[in-house]
Length: 543
Image (cartoon, rainbow, N blue to C red; front, side):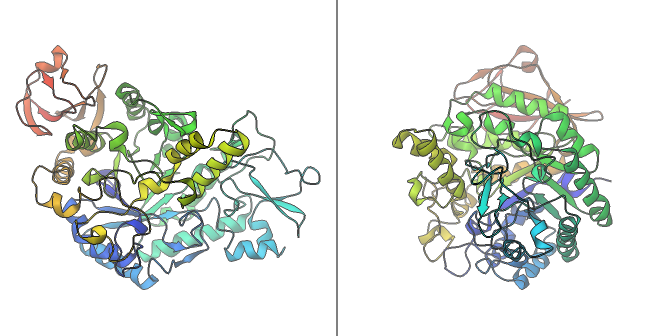
């Protein structure tokens, strides 16, 4: 029997930027509840919430201070329970973010660990330095800089693969595994459908030897990325927890995973799907600091390789950590709406579970770049510090590069209408709005049958209706350049998808010009006659 996640679409909600119910400028759980009818009308059945736990918000919730409490700005546990109840009435399920590679340094476990209290000191990774003032090894944080922080009172260093405010948990300690199992059961018993597991392939450190290479971030990852111990832990969590909840989903955020490793996560009952990052780097250079010209053929190669190499995957083009896809892979000037629809066609017709990030269904853009000093993103600030102080990049260029890392830009508040606060808040929004200042908002797009929002609704409905699109095999066709052409096949039924991700008309290969079938959906007016217009997309049921 097919699982819900194999047939339906996931909608990611970044709660702080979705809808503010009380005018404090920050989105919250009651705000989400107020928009459930909108989400139901979109056709999504699974809602993924970025962290809502109690947190000092140094990394915007990915630094958890209490796994059993809701952050006061988000609401209460009673609000959370009401969200479950109201979602269930509309046939929707809730996925939570699980952040267990690290906690906040304000978590009670870590506070007690700093006092040297047993058993909490062993909940984290503490080590003596090589010598006075020298960390235990040469590892660097994913946010740049040393991955160790010195604690004078203990004369020890603790590991943090991310910021110093995010100390790593010690997954060699069985007590840590039991604590995580308790957290999982607590929310699964409440009715949570599953978890998106943050940086889940980094949790088990196989050794603490020095790392190789010169990389400024992630040095040493050969000792902790997708280790054998990591695989054993995920299998144990499935065996001891998830197997008791037959209706669930486990989604992994997995850094630097290749196709064989990704397939192993799926094959061995560790994850149901995983996020890969390779396709999100096709327009980046220098680790992401420089954006280069987008070439559709590079995106196609990565996507098609994964389509054929793994049995199932999480399909996404944007999220809370990635700049918006439309300015990257589409055209925000001459072909804004049609290119947004072309990307939607690709997203929702590939094999796997599609993830829509809030506002993506409107063709939402990024917020304007700001000065680094104004950014709330700890990663952006750390990277700027590295660029200036360690690499001696000139100030102007360093700020430009840091802006490309600034996750504030993709976390701009949702635009619901054109009123003050764009319907997001009656107060002052916690982040600036997107560059178009909300002209593409829910209220305006609701009024047009030709809007990006209307197209997403049609696509989601079509994906559910056609078994080829939600359960069919992926059959790539031999095309080059800017053309994405492939079939989705289920038994004798077959659907052809053709997409031109370029700002010029594209003549179709002769063998595609002669296909016969019914056009199920296209993003442009006129007949399909031997070519696709700029950013044209068509879905055809083959005869």
